[in-house]
Structures are given as structure tokens and as C-alpha cells.
Image (cartoon, rainbow, N blue to C red; front, top):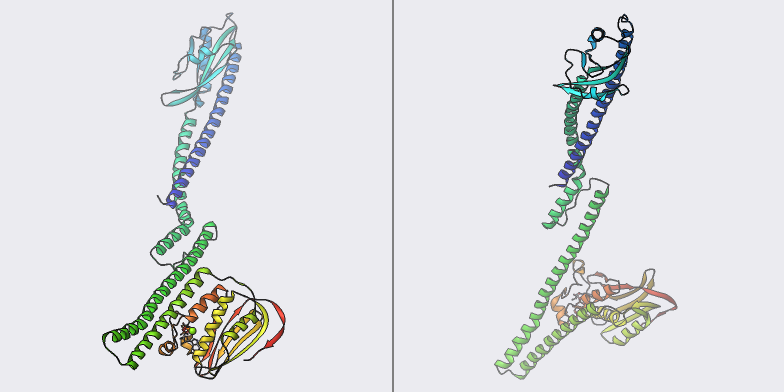
Length: 476
Ligand code: ATP
Ligand code: MG
């Protein structure tokens, strides 16, 4: 059963019970009050009749010591006539509780009469056929006799009114119930609308539409739930997007890797086959062996670089405070001045947050790329500057540069702008991918600016701890 239907059912049950019970008590209360009033009136009437009887008895001519039965009948008959308009019936009985006078229609047993005596008056409500009466009984003292006067008052009207009250209330209750159900139907469907919308959203998401959001139609707890659900969906969509991108990147990586593996292997196999299948002259043999060697070297570089990436990802970075100077000293020792390149080191003194060997790897890669991009005798500047956000390293060359549309791709594994040029310089297309990994571990990223034909500036910012005084510029 649907939640809204349950809500409707329970509300209907509660309304019906409340209306039923309160209606029953109300109609019954009115009935009880009316009946009590009728009983009071019946008792009053009996008192008045007794008084009238006793007065009439006093007026009977004194012929006998005791009131004669005939006189009793006469008085009773007069009393009955006086009360005819109200439909009241009477019965007079003697000391032995034998009837002396009975109105026509006074048909009831003697039970009440037997309960009545000189000191006790009584009453009861009885039904005769389909009519209801209040019967009262009381003793009357008249001329030395103790008689019993009973009255019968028709109160069928009160009972009919009660039955009518119940019927009217029943109809009213049915009307109110129908009205209540219609109103509750709309309220229940409005209240449960957020739930229906959420159910739809979960279905859509389960079917793969992660961008689907539930519409928020209220600001109560269900509205909050919708908000939270939508927030959860956003996070989920983002995570799934990331996972998909990661899977795609992995697929691309495997594809590129297989391709990069195939090229040197094809050369190696080709030249090795040539060497073993025919006798080559010395020059050709040397050339073939050289190809095999260089391609083998390239494979070695590639596998080492890949290993670096894997190890870096797995081990993470052990970041500590390092003198920027020590990093530059290392670079100076690695890239000694030679005829091919001019290196220009310039840096501020500072303590930077770095994993020394990993940042050395990044800088060496950037310098390596700069060298590969430069003409013979080219100038390469390596700069370290403090800035508000930390400490910036920049490696600038004046070489071939990178076209703008390639900039976003060169950090992908195995991506090389000019494959043959990079390969001829023993490039595997993995250097910048490794740099990106390492910088991510330092909470930083690679920033490359380049103009084809003019040169490239590749840099990154590390967190810097405290400034040391002095500013040193070193050229070599
Ligand atoms: P590896 O670094 O693995 O030996 P690689 O240098 O070719 O090989 P990356 O360092 O990842 O690979 O660089 C990717 C590509 O980006 C290079 O092949 C080159 O085309 C381009 N590139 C990188 N740095 C520069 C630069 N300073 N000037 C011009 N092109 C560059
Ligand atoms: Mg490189």
C-alpha cells in the first residue's frame, strides 16, 4: 500500500472514530437530559394529583368513617378527565394493592406498585408495544385510607427524537467523512509529493542518468532530504565522472604504452633479424648494432621512467624544509657549463617545502626538456623567486616552443609534440607526466607558457617556510 494511501486510511479511521464517538455521546446526552426532565415532570404531576385527590377527598360528604370505593372511583374519574389533554393515564389501588380505578390503556404489570409503600414513592421507564412511558407510584392518604396512585406519562417522543438524532448525525457523519477524505486525499498527495519525486530521481539514477536531480517542492524535513539527496547525487556524479576519466586515462595509457613499446621493438627485431640472417659488411653490422643499442636504451629509459611514476605514486612524498640553494647547487653540478648550452641560475635564498629527490627530478626533467628544445649554444635560465604564495621555480629556454593547442596535452604520458624529434633525443614522452605526479604530491602543478619559435617557460610554486635574508644571483 502506498504511503499516501496509508495516510488517507488512518486519517479516515481516526475521523470516523472521533465523529462516531462524539456524535453518540452528544445525541445520548441530549436524550438523557430530556428524559430526566420528563421524569421530574412525571413525579411533579404525581404530587399534584395526590394533592388534588386528597383535597377532593376532603370535600366528599361525611356519611361514612372511611372513604368509599365508589367515591374513590368518582374522584379518580374527575382527575382523569382534567388530565386528558396531556394523555396522562392513572391507576388507583387500595391498601391491598387491588385496582379501584384504571384509565383505559393503562396496561402494565404491578411490579412498581409492589415496590411502592406509604413511605416510598417510585418510578420507572417502561415500553408497551412500540411506545415508551414513565410510570410513577405514590401513596395517598384520604379519609383514613392509604391508597396508591400511579401515573403513566407517554415519553415516546423523547425516544423518537433520540432515534432521529442518531439518524441525522449518521448522515452528517457520512457527509463529513466524504468531505474529509477528499480534503485529506489532496493533502496526503501534496505531502508525499517530495517522496514521489525522490523515488523518480533514484530510479533515473539507477538507470544511469546521474545528472538527474529531484525537484525541491517544500522547505520542511522532506525538502531538506531532497536537498541532501541532490547534494549526494552531485558528489556521486562527480566521483563517477572522475572514475570514468581515470579509466579512460588508464586505457589511453595502456594504448600509448603498447604503441611506444612496439616502435623500438620492431626496430630491434628487424635489425637483429638482419644480423642473424645474412652476412653484412662491417659498416652495416655496426650500424645495425647501433640501432639495436639506441632503441634498447630508449626502452630502458622508458621502463625506468615508468617505474619512477609507479614508485612516486605508491610511496608519496616526504616533504621537508629544504634550502632552495641546495637544489640549485645540485642543478649546477648536473648541468655543467659546456659549448652546447649556457645555463643561467638565479635564485632567492629561502626554505622551501619539498621532497628533495623528487623536486630534483622535476627540475632535471624541465632542464632536460629545455635543452632538447634549444639550438646548440642556446641559453637556459633557471630562476627561483619568492612570491606571496610561496617560492616559484622557472626554467626558461629560447628554443622551438610549443604550439598553444599542444600545451594541454604534453603532460599526458607518451605524448610528444614532434615524435621523431623527441625520439631522436631519446625521449619517451614520460618526463612531464612524472613531473605532474610529483608536483601533485606537493600540492602544486606545472605551469607552462610558450610561444612557438620564441621559447618556453615551465614553472611551479612550492610552499616556502620563512625568508632568509640576502639575494644571490649566480650565472654560469
Ligand atoms: P622524456 O622526458 O620521457 O625523456 P620527452 O621529453 O619527450 O621524453 P616530456 O618531457 O613529457 O617527454 O615532454 C613531452 C613533450 O612536450 C616533448 O616531447 C616535447 O614535444 C614537448 N616539450 C616539453 N618541454 C618542452 C620545451 N621546453 N620546449 C618545447 N617542447 C617541449
Ligand atoms: Mg622530457
